[in-house]
Image 1: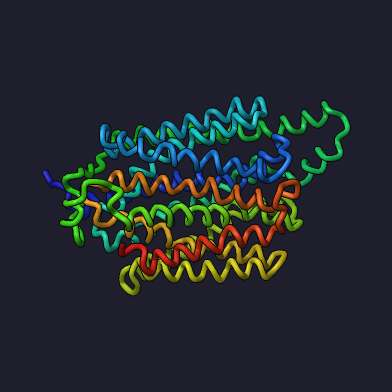
Image 2: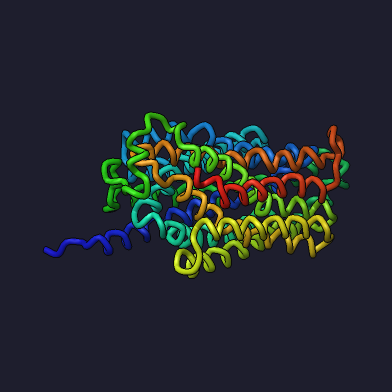
Length: 426
């Protein structure tokens, strides 16, 4: 009987992981549409409340990342992936009672549960894709996975926007002018009910994927077989994960990166609404950002590591992030929206570069190091909420939309430049 070669095994693993990255992207990039949907359906007073959507979702990573590493140690990477999918499915099913009652706190609970599942899934997926081949080409493999992720992310706002935000501008106007409470409630209940069937379908697909992964022949990555890379002898001498400065600086770098990625992807619609663009248009803006990210991933596949290193790609990406952020501030209208979308191009190669740079040379600390990095995803919970708070007309700051955006973006990209230049070496 013919046995599988390492190349065949790796190819099989890449296909399975690609499917999971597609799933991860589809669920994650629904948030941009959900922010606008829930603000209308739950009659939220301001954008600060609406951005608790991203806070609830991404904060789950902070709380579950380290426990996830221990879960993976007990049940293996493969079973951890299946478990993560099942937890996400539970979160999807929680949308049913949330929609029936139009209770914002229950929607946030559902999003937090989804985030829990994604934290488990991410904690398994990212080191897996980094370790399954040479560490110096990890950015290329992550870029391929990023294409799967961002294609799904491009599709999810289009699908959900068409299903749950159909004629959203008209409904928004009808709700504003409705004087009869019963009429207003009927409109909002009908709108909220639109999410039920899509999330039931998602839950079924996730459960089937969990079964598929658990029955698959994915090769298991053992700590004993984690790669020996540059200066791994140093890792052997370490006694604590806190003795790796390049990892700790990388966690902060990932925190800031995810924050700006969520700003460019999920907050672009809110930015558009703030400058007076209609909801029927802004509900699709996330797709523009993800199209730009897709272009960035394709560039990464053909250039890393053949023409530029992971570190150089990160440095160039950070520079373009600074430039595009300034251009968002200096322009207005649809032009500023175009530059926010172009930030997707800047952000595309950051995760593929930061993760392997930060996880390199950790040796037996690889799993816990990956968990620390996954905790950094909580940046998506914090930075968009800071943006909404700064520009809130009823808040203490009440800065302009453009100034609030710049304050949240520019320092993040400057720190990422530092990490690409020096931080990853420490």
